[in-house]
Length: 72
Image 1 (cartoon, helix red, strand yellow):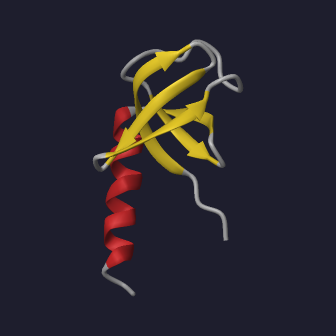
Image 2 (tube, rainbow, N blue to C red):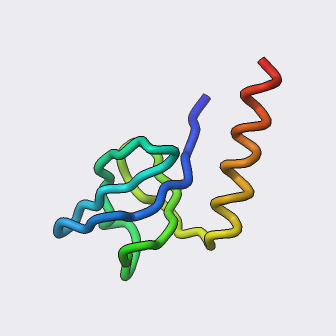
């Protein structure tokens, strides 16, 4: 199973961004998206930002992940 995670862009370094979610920071390639800015929410999969999200979409998705934790 593959999982893509909503993460917030906190730093941009050329074609890479530092993204953060729940205190976890990672680098992600941003070459697949146009005009990524600081503060944008993106879906990260396999080390690449593959889609942009609104803040509400990101929050809703992260809330669903939290709900899933309690199911296992």
